Picture 1 (cartoon, rainbow, N blue to C red):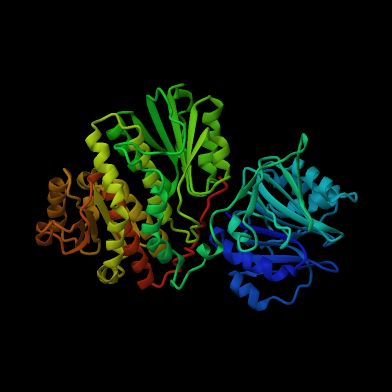
Picture 2: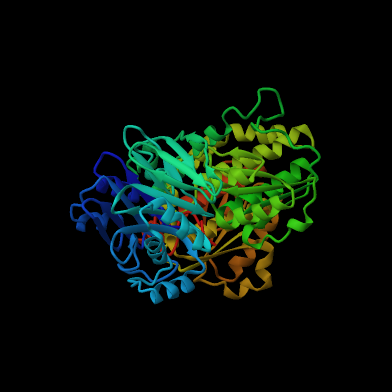
Length: 595
């Protein structure tokens, strides 16, 4: 939820921290701050963006520091509640991501012992606990403080008298960046330090890392431990806007490249197989897909693709609603889907399932992330860093991974798998053609931007695409958009239809086309405007819909991906017309790493 960066090395810390925080703003952006260790600890923090903080920041001299960009959970948005937080004497500074569930009792006890608090946050108790336990050994003081805490956390702390950073994690991501030349980092995301090093070490629950300018040591309750070092394949330039007005638009336009990259090396020359790069699961008789948000919509498409091609019963479940661990059998497979690999509800569901002994496959975009440690195997998407809060290219990459999995386990006719595989080969070009039609989508967005409510309707495998389109309109354009299976309109939503509620209808060229046309006629009879998404070869749709966005003709199972790409562009331009903060929507953060 919040963004954390810590730096210790031989360079001035202030600019490194500020640049790192700019890369982390997608994790939270209601307030931010930095603390730099020089003669003492100097703190500068305030409400607002990192760019605003940078303009008002005095020169803070020092080569060790920590920074934080906040997404408020405990305590309102204010300068006092912004991180970093100090102890009473100003000798300890702490930044924190997570939720301390026993903070109230700790705070009450610390106040009785004479500690004075400045904020309303749960996080501030950590700096005071460290102060309480400090006896000259900073790592030991942090370790004792962490032992007192209940809840989830990623913490980076520093002390006035020690040129080192101490980081600790429990259920929230924390990553070490190592560089002999540029110094060492502890952060909540690799983007914070990717400009300086591509060497990352992912801490595990219970780890405490001590970083100095010469190295990093990691311990847990059993003593010193070694964690594997991961080489990040992304380049720092991939996390920049590259001339686009917003990251969201850049990432939408990266989708053809992402499709090709995710398919690369995975489609065999000999039909009909694919190479997933993982060991094959035997005796699969049940598959459950676990995910949240956009990843859940990808799971819903995967549910249908897997069931249709493999004949294996598959079901998608929202992670926070997963209660089925007891029903899983040895021949079951659980597929956890998370862009960041750190989604708290998904990890909690997988942890529960793992305790029952079920097999787990992770689909994620981030090597070394927490989800990979819960899983037996991992199928990586190859989307590269996604900075905009609204997921676009990672949704596409997840769909590609799920299509490949469905082909790999196909038990139906080889023809079905071959058609899907050939469709995948042509897919990047079809998405490119949607991007080429951007001017027409802009025109539709201008008209749609005047409405405050919208319905999206679809049937079959495209219903998840409608759900994803509605989510995008809500996330970035603040349009109250709801998706419905088209046949459900009669069961209540018809009451809201009228001139003030446009309907976006997905009309693919499959067996749902005719019932969708019937639904459009019914919608039109209630006076609502209809914007249809339809294949290029559907001439009849012009006679029914008020306007049409054309998508390329494709294999029916691939149509959700193409329709979702068009809806991403539509949502982006509606948001742009409405003057919304597209990359940083109000009240939202990119990675939901706390419950």
